[in-house]
Length: 315
Length: 315
Image (cartoon, rainbow over all chains, first blue to last red; front, side, top):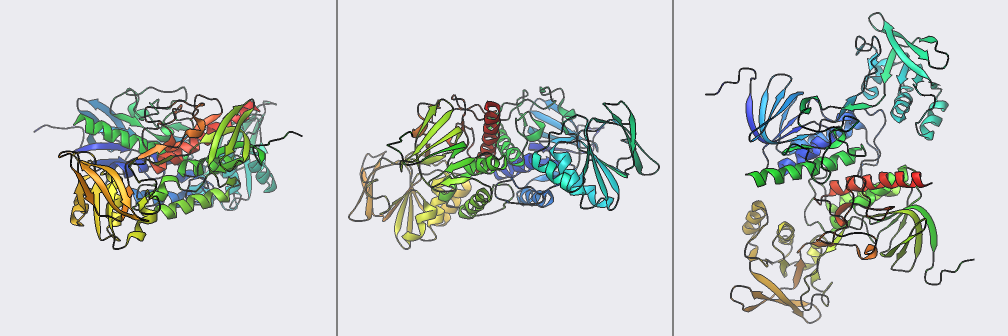
């Protein structure tokens, strides 16, 4: 009997899908319906939908639905089909002779004939002093999750794109005062978002480079540089919401794929294969031109059908 | 004032979307949300979903829904956003200096800066004697639409793929006797479909080349050749359901695009552009590798966002 000293489990699947967002869920539904023995590894479901501050109005079939509701529908749909689900984070994907080993952060290991990377993107951190220290104690990357905690507090949203403005508009329902800090001199959010934020009394500060987040047990202020005057300015806030974009979650496949200049996985858009045969990618983790829920779901479906074809042709 | 003797109307849009299936509906929703002045030209909504004999269980978010219900949700979602809708069939798309003329079968003409072809695919006809004559009088290309008319009648489904078997299984609820006629010696439908059809008493005839459909006012029989014995055999049926695949609806853009060997429109899968700048394509009308509702919806979305980018960059 072979020994696997470093890992506790080892199971053989046809297909392992990494990620529980729209791409991963769609891939899982299709894979199960094609009778592939399928494992979905995801720390949580919904991907970036979970962080949506506003309702979703552009997933065809649902005129208006909250991110949470749509996640629940996707997860229920996935679970109705026969897939195994492992609630974990992937540590490493390794190419072996007949497929792949996929190991997780909690030191389990699985084997599969093919793998779909649908791990989406994580919020991009500020890399400001104090940021890490105050995560969960005033610093948040998810307005939808943490907004209600800041009732009657003053909060700053960092990032003046659409997601920053949507976060600010949503926070306005709870918080006493909402600031938006934007690094650039201009705001690029849609005119409608800007108008609504102005109407609600959101204070927009441009040319603001966030330097430090301060506090005792909890955040009590931020310090930003006014990039025009070069002065450091202190803003009394109890909450900091970071909305400066996202970065693809790809650390576990670094040596198996090629990357775009935005660190997204490059893939063949016809069949979703990466440069490693049997390793597919779908959704926001890839350099697909547009990042949208329905596009990710379509891409996950393409990846699953291509993986099915790959597995059938190999066996 | 310029005269347009051949056409009644002439209106200028940012974007014209041809087709009302999942790709066209998704494109329309996104185009309207990007504030493009949008026209959707479609004879009817839903595309091939309207012909689905069985419930849809693979559009993420809906565990099980009839084609008709999902069509209504897509159409309602589209209409909630601000688009013009023209219920017509496109006759011709013509490239002009600043965009395109799109003329319809009822002799209206529209102009747009960009066009998305999302016209899907039509059922492939048998090209058997009598087929055209008996359309609507026994010959049908839509089990979901026409099945109930054949209560207690005998019917033949032509085509032994999955859609043929699904049609036969669905017809079994109404018809007295259901035959499947398959041209090839083997059946390629899924094992589960075959098992269920057998259990329901569906009679599967392989090596059957349909030659003629006969009747008076209505179909009363079909004649097929047994390709093994070369004998002509008459089968008494009152209904003939044609399920031998589909063909892309592209006659109106023949000189503006390139075609695959299956007569599908070739396009750049990254931005959905065809070989003509400003002319985009999405969904089952294209050579996208897999034809599925959620893939078509994702492709329509990609096409709309690319068309938006194209229009903005031109103006």
